[in-house]
Length: 196
Image 1 (cartoon, helix red, strand yellow):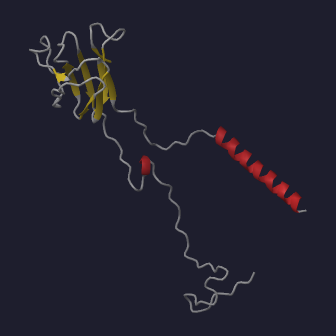
Image 2 (cartoon, one colour; image 1 turned 180 degrees about the vertical axis):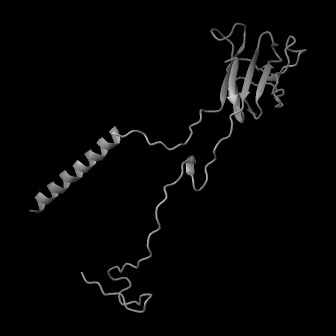
Image 3 (spheres, rainbow, N blue to C red; image 1 turned 135 degrees about the vertical axis):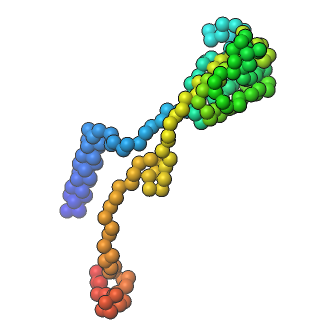
Protein backbone atom coordinates (compact mmCIF):
# COMPACT_ATOMS: atom_id res chain seq x y z
CA UNK A 1 0.00 0.00 0.00
CA UNK A 2 2.80 2.39 0.93
CA UNK A 3 4.68 1.63 -2.31
CA UNK A 4 1.60 2.42 -4.36
CA UNK A 5 1.13 5.77 -2.54
CA UNK A 6 4.76 6.66 -3.20
CA UNK A 7 4.37 5.87 -6.91
CA UNK A 8 1.20 7.97 -7.10
CA UNK A 9 2.91 10.84 -5.24
CA UNK A 10 5.96 10.63 -7.54
CA UNK A 11 3.76 10.57 -10.64
CA UNK A 12 1.74 13.53 -9.38
CA UNK A 13 4.92 15.49 -8.62
CA UNK A 14 6.30 14.69 -12.07
CA UNK A 15 3.07 15.80 -13.74
CA UNK A 16 3.10 19.08 -11.82
CA UNK A 17 6.75 19.69 -12.78
CA UNK A 18 5.99 18.92 -16.42
CA UNK A 19 3.01 21.32 -16.38
CA UNK A 20 5.16 24.09 -14.89
CA UNK A 21 7.86 23.58 -17.54
CA UNK A 22 5.31 23.60 -20.38
CA UNK A 23 3.69 26.79 -19.09
CA UNK A 24 7.10 28.44 -18.67
CA UNK A 25 8.14 27.48 -22.21
CA UNK A 26 4.91 28.72 -23.81
CA UNK A 27 4.53 31.88 -21.78
CA UNK A 28 5.90 35.10 -23.22
CA UNK A 29 8.39 37.20 -21.24
CA UNK A 30 6.82 39.45 -18.62
CA UNK A 31 6.52 43.11 -19.48
CA UNK A 32 8.12 44.97 -16.60
CA UNK A 33 8.63 48.44 -18.01
CA UNK A 34 12.32 48.25 -17.04
CA UNK A 35 14.75 49.68 -19.57
CA UNK A 36 17.83 47.70 -20.46
CA UNK A 37 20.74 49.95 -21.31
CA UNK A 38 23.54 49.11 -23.69
CA UNK A 39 27.00 48.95 -22.20
CA UNK A 40 28.15 52.53 -21.92
CA UNK A 41 31.93 52.18 -22.24
CA UNK A 42 34.31 51.63 -25.12
CA UNK A 43 37.72 50.08 -25.64
CA UNK A 44 40.31 51.38 -28.07
CA UNK A 45 43.38 49.28 -28.88
CA UNK A 46 46.64 50.91 -29.95
CA UNK A 47 47.83 48.73 -32.86
CA UNK A 48 50.99 48.61 -34.93
CA UNK A 49 50.03 46.41 -37.86
CA UNK A 50 47.59 45.87 -40.70
CA UNK A 51 44.67 45.45 -41.39
CA UNK A 52 43.47 48.16 -39.00
CA UNK A 53 46.33 50.60 -39.53
CA UNK A 54 47.03 52.57 -42.69
CA UNK A 55 50.27 53.90 -41.18
CA UNK A 56 52.79 52.35 -38.78
CA UNK A 57 50.50 52.73 -35.73
CA UNK A 58 46.83 53.49 -35.13
CA UNK A 59 43.98 53.62 -32.66
CA UNK A 60 41.47 50.84 -33.36
CA UNK A 61 38.68 51.72 -33.72
CA UNK A 62 39.64 55.26 -34.64
CA UNK A 63 36.20 56.66 -33.88
CA UNK A 64 34.06 55.60 -30.92
CA UNK A 65 30.71 56.80 -29.62
CA UNK A 66 29.68 56.56 -25.94
CA UNK A 67 27.02 57.95 -23.62
CA UNK A 68 27.80 60.76 -21.19
CA UNK A 69 29.23 59.26 -18.02
CA UNK A 70 30.92 56.42 -19.92
CA UNK A 71 34.50 55.32 -19.62
CA UNK A 72 36.84 54.86 -22.58
CA UNK A 73 39.83 52.58 -22.06
CA UNK A 74 42.83 52.71 -24.36
CA UNK A 75 45.01 49.57 -24.34
CA UNK A 76 48.52 49.67 -25.82
CA UNK A 77 49.06 46.51 -27.86
CA UNK A 78 52.19 47.83 -29.61
CA UNK A 79 55.87 47.48 -28.73
CA UNK A 80 56.39 51.22 -28.07
CA UNK A 81 54.84 53.84 -25.79
CA UNK A 82 52.07 56.15 -27.05
CA UNK A 83 49.94 59.01 -25.69
CA UNK A 84 46.32 60.10 -25.74
CA UNK A 85 46.43 63.90 -26.11
CA UNK A 86 43.62 66.32 -26.98
CA UNK A 87 44.21 68.06 -30.30
CA UNK A 88 45.03 71.71 -30.79
CA UNK A 89 44.88 73.39 -34.22
CA UNK A 90 48.69 73.78 -34.20
CA UNK A 91 49.38 70.12 -33.43
CA UNK A 92 46.62 68.55 -35.55
CA UNK A 93 46.95 70.16 -38.99
CA UNK A 94 44.39 72.87 -38.20
CA UNK A 95 41.92 70.52 -36.54
CA UNK A 96 40.86 71.70 -33.11
CA UNK A 97 40.01 69.77 -29.98
CA UNK A 98 36.35 69.30 -30.94
CA UNK A 99 33.32 70.86 -29.28
CA UNK A 100 33.27 68.79 -26.08
CA UNK A 101 33.93 70.62 -22.81
CA UNK A 102 35.56 67.79 -20.81
CA UNK A 103 39.24 68.39 -20.04
CA UNK A 104 40.78 65.39 -21.80
CA UNK A 105 44.47 66.27 -21.61
CA UNK A 106 47.75 64.39 -22.10
CA UNK A 107 47.78 60.83 -20.77
CA UNK A 108 51.56 60.72 -20.58
CA UNK A 109 53.37 57.72 -22.06
CA UNK A 110 51.33 54.51 -22.12
CA UNK A 111 53.74 51.56 -22.19
CA UNK A 112 53.20 48.23 -23.93
CA UNK A 113 50.42 46.29 -22.16
CA UNK A 114 49.30 49.33 -20.14
CA UNK A 115 45.92 51.08 -20.23
CA UNK A 116 44.66 54.63 -19.91
CA UNK A 117 41.08 55.34 -18.78
CA UNK A 118 39.07 58.51 -19.11
CA UNK A 119 35.41 59.05 -18.14
CA UNK A 120 33.58 61.47 -20.41
CA UNK A 121 30.85 63.38 -18.58
CA UNK A 122 29.76 66.00 -21.12
CA UNK A 123 28.38 65.52 -24.64
CA UNK A 124 30.47 66.59 -27.61
CA UNK A 125 33.22 65.49 -29.98
CA UNK A 126 36.78 65.03 -28.73
CA UNK A 127 39.66 64.80 -31.22
CA UNK A 128 42.91 63.28 -29.90
CA UNK A 129 46.31 62.17 -31.23
CA UNK A 130 49.64 60.61 -30.17
CA UNK A 131 52.33 63.21 -29.41
CA UNK A 132 55.13 60.72 -30.17
CA UNK A 133 54.06 59.95 -33.74
CA UNK A 134 51.93 62.98 -34.63
CA UNK A 135 48.43 63.60 -35.87
CA UNK A 136 49.09 62.37 -39.43
CA UNK A 137 50.08 58.91 -38.16
CA UNK A 138 47.82 58.49 -35.13
CA UNK A 139 44.55 60.23 -34.31
CA UNK A 140 41.04 59.35 -33.28
CA UNK A 141 37.74 60.80 -32.05
CA UNK A 142 35.37 60.14 -29.20
CA UNK A 143 31.76 61.24 -29.72
CA UNK A 144 29.84 61.58 -26.47
CA UNK A 145 26.04 61.68 -26.63
CA UNK A 146 23.68 62.69 -23.87
CA UNK A 147 22.30 59.44 -22.51
CA UNK A 148 19.23 61.15 -21.03
CA UNK A 149 17.75 60.40 -17.63
CA UNK A 150 18.41 57.01 -16.10
CA UNK A 151 16.22 55.42 -13.49
CA UNK A 152 17.98 54.47 -10.29
CA UNK A 153 16.86 51.50 -8.21
CA UNK A 154 15.05 52.35 -5.00
CA UNK A 155 14.04 50.10 -2.12
CA UNK A 156 10.48 50.07 -3.47
CA UNK A 157 11.69 49.38 -7.02
CA UNK A 158 14.80 47.21 -7.12
CA UNK A 159 16.22 47.03 -10.64
CA UNK A 160 13.70 49.76 -11.60
CA UNK A 161 10.75 47.32 -11.41
CA UNK A 162 7.89 48.03 -8.96
CA UNK A 163 7.23 45.39 -6.34
CA UNK A 164 3.76 43.77 -6.33
CA UNK A 165 1.32 45.12 -3.76
CA UNK A 166 -0.42 42.59 -1.54
CA UNK A 167 -3.28 43.28 0.90
CA UNK A 168 -2.22 43.27 4.55
CA UNK A 169 -2.57 39.99 6.38
CA UNK A 170 -5.13 39.93 9.20
CA UNK A 171 -3.68 39.80 12.70
CA UNK A 172 -5.20 36.50 13.81
CA UNK A 173 -3.46 34.47 16.53
CA UNK A 174 -2.87 30.89 15.44
CA UNK A 175 -2.35 28.37 18.24
CA UNK A 176 0.48 25.91 17.57
CA UNK A 177 0.89 22.52 19.23
CA UNK A 178 2.82 22.95 22.47
CA UNK A 179 3.24 26.71 21.97
CA UNK A 180 1.06 29.09 23.91
CA UNK A 181 -1.26 26.35 25.16
CA UNK A 182 -3.06 27.60 28.22
CA UNK A 183 -1.71 31.17 27.74
CA UNK A 184 -4.25 33.98 27.87
CA UNK A 185 -5.53 35.49 24.63
CA UNK A 186 -6.06 39.25 24.21
CA UNK A 187 -9.70 38.82 25.30
CA UNK A 188 -8.60 37.07 28.53
CA UNK A 189 -9.62 33.50 27.58
CA UNK A 190 -7.02 30.74 27.44
CA UNK A 191 -5.75 29.22 24.18
CA UNK A 192 -7.09 25.74 23.63
CA UNK A 193 -4.73 22.89 24.37
CA UNK A 194 -3.70 20.98 21.26
CA UNK A 195 -3.36 17.25 21.27
CA UNK A 196 -1.87 15.05 18.58
